[in-house]
Amino acid sequence: MFRFANPDFLYLLFILPVLIGFYFYTIIRKKKAIKKYGNPELLAALMPEVSSKRQHLKFWLLFGAITLIIFVIAGPQFGSKLETVKRQGIEIMVCLDVSNSMMSEDVAPNRLEKAKQMLSRLTDGLSNDKVGLIVFAGDAFTQLPITSDYISAKMFLSSINPSMVSSQGTSIGAAINLAARSFTPNETSDKAIILITDGENHEDDAVGAAQKASEKGIYVNIVGIGSPQGAPIPAGGNNNYMKDRDGNVVITKLNEQMCQEIAAAGNGMYVRADNTNTALKALQTELDKMTKAELDSKIYSEYDEQFQLLAWIVLVLLIAEFLTLDRKNRIFRKVKLFS
Image 1 (cartoon, rainbow, N blue to C red):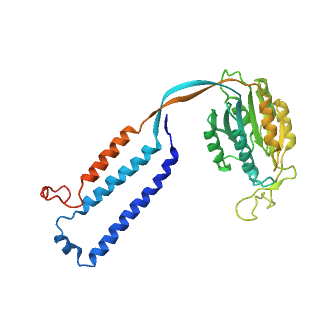
Image 2 (image 1 turned 120 degrees about the vertical axis):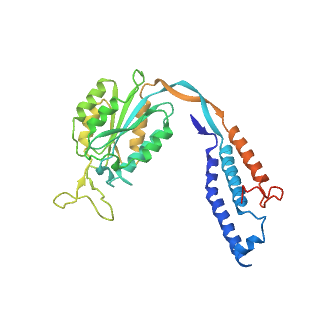
C-alpha cells in the first residue's frame, strides 16, 4: 500500500503553476525589451552565442527538480507487511434513506444533511468497531462495504445525495435485507443495523425483513428523521416546492408508527432525530451496551521509505541544469544540439 508520511507538504505543488506563469512572464518582458532596440531577427545575428532553447531547457530541468523535491519531503512510502490485527469491537451497517423526501427542511438544514452530520459524529466516537454504509430509495445499494477505515467512511458519507439512487421511493425492507448480508461471516461480535429514514412511501415488507434479521442475532435500530406535522420538499429555486399532479404542494411527514414497528420487529430501538443531539446520544448508548468480540482487521504495519530514487533523479537534474549554460559553448559551437 502506498502513502505519504507527510502529505501536507503536497500543498506545495500549488506553487508550480505560479513558477510556470512567472517564467513565461519574464520571457515576454525580455522580448519586449529586445524590441526596443530593433528587429529581434536582426539583433539575433549580433548575439550568435545566445540560445533560447538552452534557457528553456534550464528552466524545465529546475522545474522538474523542484517538483520531485516536493514529493521527496512529502515522504513516499510503501507498505511492506500486511498483518491481521485483533481488536475488540462490534459491526455496524448504516442504511441511509436518500429519497427526495429527505430534502425536506423540518429539521435543519434538512433531513439528509442532519442525518449525515449525526453519522459523522457517530463515526468519530467509534474506535475498534467496523462500519459499512448502504444508501436506499426505491432500491438499495452498498456505498461502502464493512470496514474499520473510518476516514473512507466519512469521505463516502459526505458525497451522498438523492441523485445516487435513480428510482424513487423508500424500500426499507430491501435495505435491511442487503445490510443483513453485508456483515463479516463467522464473526462472533454483536451486529447492528442503524437505519435512518422518514418512513415515507413504504413499499415492501420492512417489518418482515427486520424480523428475519433479528432471528440472525442482528439488532435493527431505527432513527426517524423529520416531524409528524410534515414539511414541503424543495424542488430547486427560492420557495419552489415539489407538487402533485393536481398542482398541490406535497407535504412529507415522518411515519413514526411504521418506524416503531420495524424497530420492535428487529429487537432494536426507535428514536426520533430532531435539532438536538438526543438521537445521537441514544444511539451511542445503545451501541455501548452491545457485546464486543475480537474483529480481524488487515493493516500495513511496516512502511519502507521510497524517496531515495527520487532524490537521485533530483541530483541528476540539478547537475544537468548547472552544466547547461545560457550561451553556446565556444568549444562545442559546431555541435547543433541546441541550435
